[in-house]
Length: 508
Image (cartoon, rainbow, N blue to C red):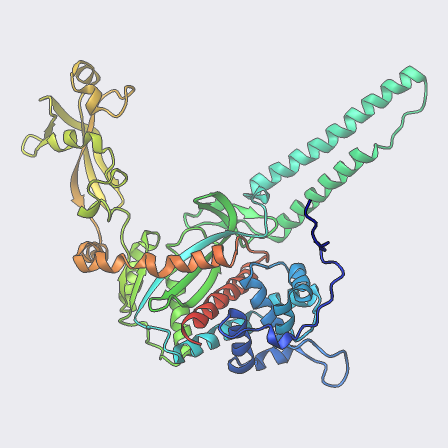
């Protein structure tokens, strides 16, 4: 039988001589981080926080902390405790830290308290990228990435909902005490002993926990005002992080933030980034355009840089207000409406873009007689105008016509004409007015043109790979900080890591 050498599977007692300076290999992201932070980035703004010129313990160099955080984020490590452990176990992290091992409290404080300074680093890195000719500066794409926040959606609700939740907790406490009292009274009658008034430890812990929740709700309600939405209705607040909000995503509803990114076409570098506590994108176009203009002005491009530039966004940003904004700012924008694919001949055979396609023949065979003000169905029956027939939908006005239940029940085409067996009769709508503003008409014509379709098709190749890199390769699956300003810092740090990886691949 073969014999093999004994091996140490866990390698617990191995000590190796390591030169930390040799662990950072040229052409890697770690080398880019070290080169940029040590030689290209102005870190002087971080020094104003250190006040130990004459007395006090020496502070950690902000260069070291920033290099460690960026490298940890590039490896999907965002917890301050895990970053601290990472600096002690990973040899590349040790090399970037210059053999320092900062505590997790130092790391957490650095991330959350240097928002403006990290934004300057973001701009400084873009300046270097521009010097390397990595920015096209002509075409940009905007999109958002919705990620969970460090808050539970179970803690959300209107003020009325929160008061109801508090009342429910109080009732649960009262019920626990009442049940315990009844049991004690039975024990007294049975054994003729005194009532045991102290609750068992397990029940007392449950009550203490519920009292803490009640106190938390009371504190929140007394220190905050209801959030009023765009339609003058109260929006849901969140006790843990009130600046976050509930958002619909492809994976369900989350309590989180919407990380917005403006991406340059040439090498997919992010030129503007910010996190918002809003799930809908339509209100975020203008602030992102302003942020882009500010960034480009900081790069020395001038205050009017965005004029004449091409910006592409998806249907979530389509609104009259946004189209008026891009018109006012003289931007060459491509923002399609929700129905643009239904008008595109390339998608005419795709069922998802042709609603009720199996009934299309019947929809086309209805005949509208304008003189008699009636509609004739394929079976030859007359559809008369409905009561209150004019219906306004968005920027369109429709007039509705219908048959009767008796006519449709006796019709041989009923099974193919009506949507379901429960439908009583067939309705048919005729477009009578198109009240779209000029900005909408112009954008629809622009998107439906050959040039517009080709330009919009570039959007996915520009901006979607950015979120794939950040979410999949860099493994950002949630925000760990609370509050919009701090979450924006974390989002900016990941955008910096993304830009550094682009510099590694194309610029160094």
